[in-house]
Length: 333
Ligand code: FUC
Image (cartoon, rainbow, N blue to C red; front, side):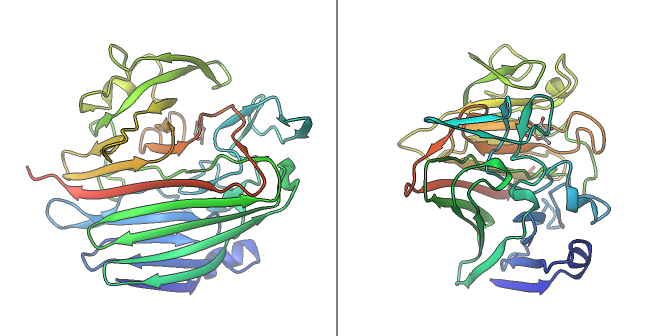
């Protein structure tokens, strides 16, 4: 296990402030590339069924695009993952004004959310079977409209067996809203060789919420069975991408068994043989298949979070925890 840390000169030049690039390596050739700007994953390099190591994350061709990052590519999202309608956040008797950066909503914390902050390197650890890096961020009360002086941490841990855990934790000095998520777009073909329509997906979900014309959830749970989003059994993404809705951009309510840590998501590319299992402690996955424009249907996001368009109240002094595990393997054909 090994960690490389260096000044990321190109991003430092774009932003005029020091950005670091960090690479976690395991002994099996898996590596995870991160940067302190946006606490963002630039690449996850994993072997295919023939042992060929390639990147399974979408990325911009031009590094400069990470500065405004319109797709939120790879980033840590906060204080608000997903949409909060109306530009107002009410916490008890206090009403806070938020930036409306999409339609009638605050999306992903606004244009200056956590994805555009330079996080601080707080520590790195190398053990025999794992290595990890901790990034930190101090959100100031009313920064971008959101209440609370919030100390946020993101710990990325890569294990020798191909497991990657992402642990977000935070503590605020007063009642606030906090809903975080990671915005990786996964494409298991490796280095974006194909679109994802032939990738297979299995979801352990109680159902999903339809969305209205503003992409806001309609809180009436629809069962995935008998819909074009039926992934109760492993099934190709084709019908969802080419069906009436033109792709997925919906919150799925996840199953959580007390007695098992079975993954809520199993995602597989039959051609490369790469498989990803995702397990989370979050109640909801906003699943997004990048349905318009640049890199259309080239990746899928599993944004593990609280249900969007609801205040996720975090009391002063109360710990916030959001932990997701990504387990990479290959399926033998
Ligand atoms: C997701 C979606 C959106 C969006 C964005 C980049 O979370 O819910 O519709 O466009 O990410």
